[in-house]
Figure 1 (cartoon, one colour):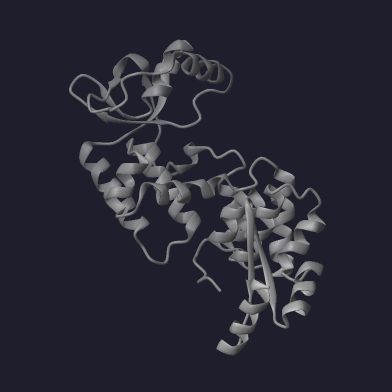
Figure 2: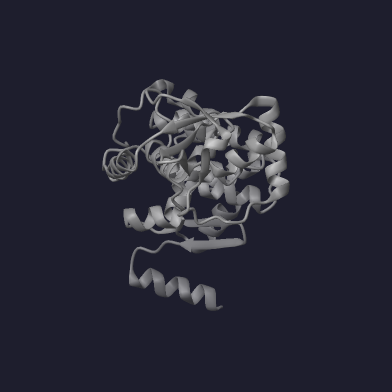
Length: 286
């Protein structure tokens, strides 16, 4: 059983089906309305080229819904530098907005907050979802790439990416992960079926109802990806005991397991002694 943290039952409601990074802003941070003309790009911003088509689409969205996530800015002698949100600022100009919502922080405040979040991510008792939220906040509010976050945390970039992907889980799956009904390994297998919300929901139910291990869950997902269309057939493969394994077990006089993957699988034949192994090899050679 995974150690319970102080996440609370309502955590799933904090991150909706379509994850909105704006929810990562602390509620107690005051949001200001700043004139668009008072803001300027951060000279240290690594991104210099912006997709004009994507900016146009974002501008259309802003016209309809406004800016959901406030920008993060730092005061300068002439106005403000944009710490995070330059793309939203550029789209706001296209949309004709006169002001934008922003959280104002000094460079010192920003550095202290970044350090606090990094320390928070490194806590051993942090749940996978709490870690994912903290990492995404570093990415969104501090313009840190996942590679840079990984470097600061001493983790591979792929590990950081996989952590953040947990935020893409369906609401029910996030709630199950938060309450330790499933593990992070189970969650990754649910994410593997992201193209089919129905299949994700069904898999979650099977894991919880049957107490499947991560390995069993992997077999189920592999079966679906291998082309098994009926869930019942996929479940049969998970059990490990099938007509095929029973037939092979009778032939060799020992336990036989079939482990399927998306591209084939393995046959596992158990033996209790060197003598039994020699007998099995003899049968296989004949």
